[in-house]
Length: 241
Image 1: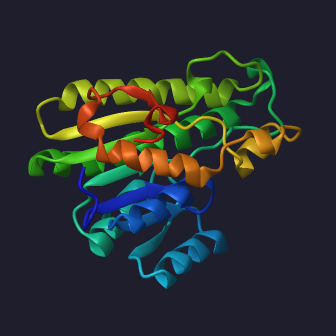
Image 2: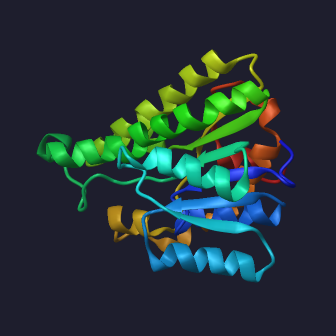
C-alpha cells in the first residue's frame, strides 16, 4: 500500500503501539486521525507529530462505546478525507489483576468484547464499505498470542482477541475481489503499560519497544498485497524487510 498521502485511522493511539504506529505512518507520509479515550496523552502525541511536521488529528472517543464509531467515522472523514487505512489497535485486558475466567465478572468480559471485538466490528462496518466502493483499502487488526494460546488468567482478553482473529478471516473472505484487504497482526510481547499491568514482574529488558514493532507493521502495510486476504501474521516475520 502506498502511504504517502493516504488517509488513515489508528485506534488506541494515545500510547504504546497505537501511538508508535501513528508516528510511523505519519513519517511515511500518511495523514492520520488518532483515536483514543479523551486524555492529555492523546493530545501530547498529536502535538509531537505536528511539531515534527506531520499531519495528525486527535479524535477523542472510546471505541467500546456503541455510540462512538459513527462519531469517529465522521470526524475522520472531515479531518483526513476518505479513509484508506484502518488500524484497530485499541485493546483492554478486561480485568486487572488478571484472574481465572470463571472468576471474571460478566461486566469485565463484556468490556473486553466491546473494546476488542464489537467496537472494531462497528468501525469496520462504517469505514470498509466506502473502501470497497472505491476499490481499495486496508484494515489491520492488532491481535495477540493470547488469541491462539490458552493462558490462565488471560481469558477475557484471549477470548476477545480470538474472535477478532476470526472476524478478520471472515471479512477477508467476504471482501476478496473488492480491492480491500484485511490483515490481523500479532505484534509480540512489548514494553507497554498494558503488559506491565498484566505482568508487573516481567523483565522489561526482554520486551520489544513499541516503535520497533510499529516499524515492522508499517512494512507489512506496504507489503499487504503479498498476504492472503484475512490472514493472521506475526510482526516479527516482517523484520528486516
